[in-house]
Length: 323
Image 1 (cartoon, rainbow, N blue to C red):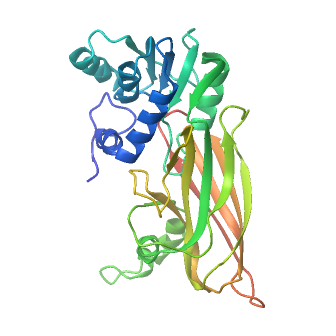
Image 2: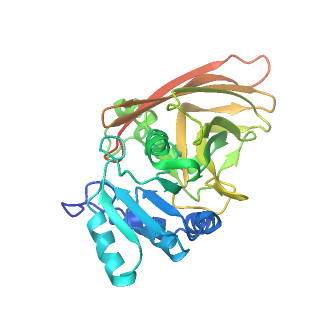
Image 3: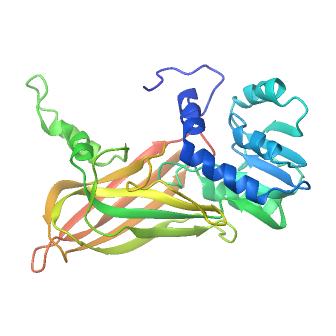
């Protein structure tokens, strides 16, 4: 169920998504364990993108001396009401701040937590947010949650997702809408729970160390060898993120499903591939104002001696979050 209209003072995520995040046991257990592992009675914790305040409240529950929640959205007013109702005496304060643009609190964090992970990890601008937060608000030797982010990708046979991407090829009410097909290919889709067959081992498209990175990724390239024959429908993408010692959050198709699911990148018409074939992929990300622009292109050699097939698509998403 998707919300058609949100209340006028909520400018970012719909409430249904906030509820899905709170009810996502994989997400909540991982962040809860990482906070419990990192917090001491002397810790100052800063929670970026606090939303409902759930991670800020857990930080206080685990004994933090002071917790500061930052968010640019209007939901922060309700976070204050939730605090008054449940944690009236807790050392938690909330501030309306855009971490990219606004002047930041002068407090220095022992623990900096930020759950701005999108369906493909990077699509809520978490890299730029954490670079500034780390530079201006984290003590030397302080803890970052998450520590890193790996963007994973694999070629897949996924009939259901592909049907959703090619639905314009069939006539509707005896009308040919096929001119819309190219636009549908230039779209990134969310998948979750669909039957997905990986045609090759997942590869790390990009590895981001939040403790050292100085700028957002722009271009990533990988080379993949097909390990099995099948019908190639597109590319599946997801993320793995280290939150703490032995705490890894994985949104992949072969793990317990999370609210993130995976993303699906079409590559045009489906292609029969054989074991030993090759796939070269180039992925680009560019931020332009309030838009995220992704492009994925590459070359597929379905089998030895076969003619290579090229693909090149792009998608633009307007994102009213931390951009």
